[in-house]
Image 1 (cartoon, helix red, strand yellow):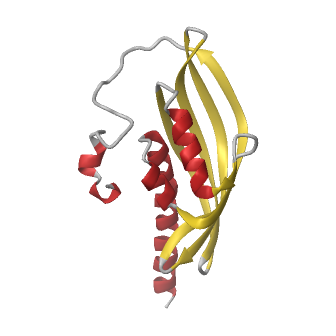
Image 2: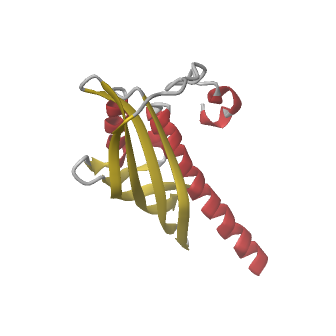
Image 3: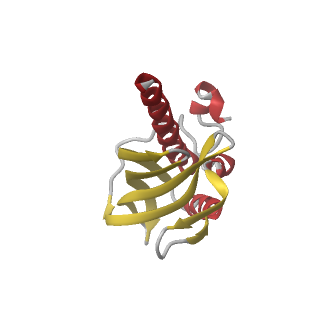
Length: 168
């Protein structure tokens, strides 16, 4: 009995972690439908001054903003998940880097933040019901690019879609 419960808890934690990773993929590939898929329809997002409103709406706002950036990348680390049946809470550290042009200068904006999430399993699927982001610190600095790899793209033409068929 204990092994079955432990395996179920590990599966639930993995499912939630996967959704956190898919969120990053969605905003980096500007894949709005993928981003919407991690939120329950009635979810709420609190990104401080940047956005407060329906969860799926923050995906629209972030992807629209990222169109103005030249490049961007999000990584998550230190994911902690606390399960309570069909409900869960999590904290994930996020590092987001965006290359932007400001006043003719190529700059990199880097934000260190945390996602404080509330999850529910509905009809057998986990989804976000609430996210609060906490920006721990940030910076903007001038950069000189070493080189650019032209193979990647911020849409479904990115080569990752060919290998990650579940995300299509």
